[in-house]
Image (tube, rainbow, N blue to C red; front, side, top):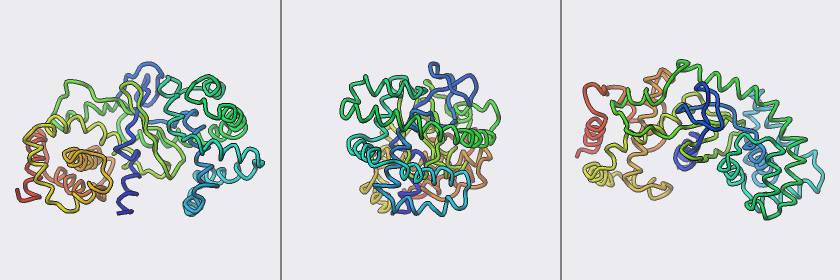
Amino acid sequence: MKKGRLKRRGYAFCCFVLILLFLTGCSLWSASRDKPEKSLVIKPEDFCIFLFESSEEIYRANVKDPAMWKELGHLAAADEDYAAHYNWLYSTYESWDGRRQAQLREIMTEYHHHPMTGKLIQDGKQGASLPDVISSIREDRFFTKNRSTLADFYSWYGTNYALPHYQRILPILEQKARTITALVEKNFDIVDFLEKETGITLKEKPEAIELLLNMRIYGASGFYRDKVSLTTIQWNATPEKIWATPFHEMSHPFFRTFTGGMSFKYLAGKLKKDGDLMKMFEEEVPYTWEGWVEENLVEGFARYLNVQKGIANDVGEGTYIFDREFAQALVDGFDPQKISLEDFTVRFLKQKYNL
């Protein structure tokens, strides 16, 4: 089960709980802070996210979870770009005096980086500069507890450590974004692609998604702002996994054109005889039963889309219970011009479970 959990976390987010939000831009791959125009943006995470996120990673690597981070040493040894970030986590903390180390511990006892970042994003400050972030810390009621420590520490840490390091890794992340987006055509429209592949035209356009690339290996975060969702993507995520994230999340509205109906709910109820499906549902799944069945289907469909788009040669390993099997069935025999996605899905489930 641990292996399965790690696989699931590897999809950014953590594909299900941390769903997301975003800024789009003049082209598919650039972001405008005010007008979401495109359905998908892939870019490096913003500095305000990195500021809080990196301080938490320094804390975990040196104080809270040192053994877990030490295990990443072999990845750093094989990856020069990641090594620069990995080694920085240690050299930075070791260069601090006792007062600064104590400040970090104090902050991490009272705060978590995710809600701090989320507050800025919800306030329209995703692109905030360091002075803007410090102003928010000094003025916003959210940061009332330990306010003076927060302002003092992040002003010092941001100026001397976070911002210089962010400027060093930014070109690396920008290159990765270019590599990922080069896997599809320049003007790729993910909604048009999904409508073509599902044979379904939605009345309302799905929420937009922004994928924010970072240098972390452990930990993904998701945020919402208005009708856009953002998720951070770990450094070690493969192009296939990165693309599976928006394919997964944006496929949900298409499947929900039929998974919310009584006939599908009745069919889903019969799947409770699957012991493995029920076991994972009871252990760690924050869904209704019908939502859990849909999650397996959508994950499989995302893998199928990777193959259809030429991003992956095959559907890869499964993440849940029958997602891989569904993906392979789609590759082998789904044609939306000959059979609806609903009918194909129902037929697959009935055949798999002898219903």
